[in-house]
Image 1 (cartoon, rainbow, N blue to C red):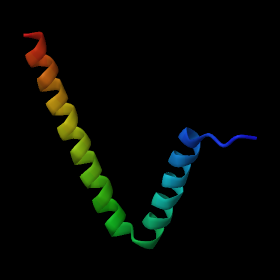
Image 2 (cartoon, rainbow, N blue to C red):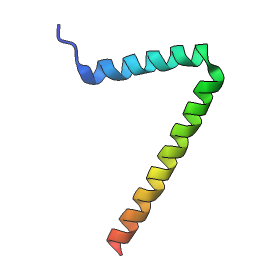
Image 3 (tube, rainbow, N blue to C red):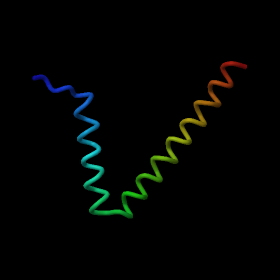
Length: 55
């Protein structure tokens, strides 16, 4: 049976994130807020880029 990296990596990252969240809830909340902010910034920049290209 072959192991598929695309399925294993997200699972391992999720498990590590869960363990980290249990050990340090405040730190995990800060990381989640930072990631959400980064995703919002990237999506806004991408939307501006698409709007500029289409104009």
